[in-house]
Image (cartoon, rainbow, N blue to C red; front, top):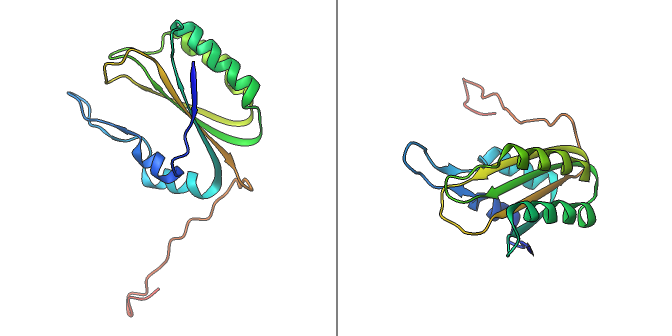
Length: 156
């Protein structure tokens, strides 16, 4: 398994995650602008890419989970996004999903893990992009600014 840390500016990286249009499916970005703003503004990001080398799919997932347990224990509230690039038309099997579901969340104290399966291209190796967003000064309620416009003056 090859592990690469991605150093692209975080906003640019999130905006670059796209799914192309294919028959019977409209493509687009994975994250909408509000999600990108939230993640960039309120978190400390870390992005890694894992590429399958010469191991089987099962061994690849096992090495990935082992790496997470050894290198990525996180304390605090964290949102984790896993973009799993599968072979054309392939999906995670129930066993693979259950394995990941059992072993990944225990690496993170609090938070959610969001998993995206991308299978639109012909590829020979599995690839996972792991996006870890550790929340800075975690807030349960975030104030959104909605301003009233005075109808007589058209000013705020």
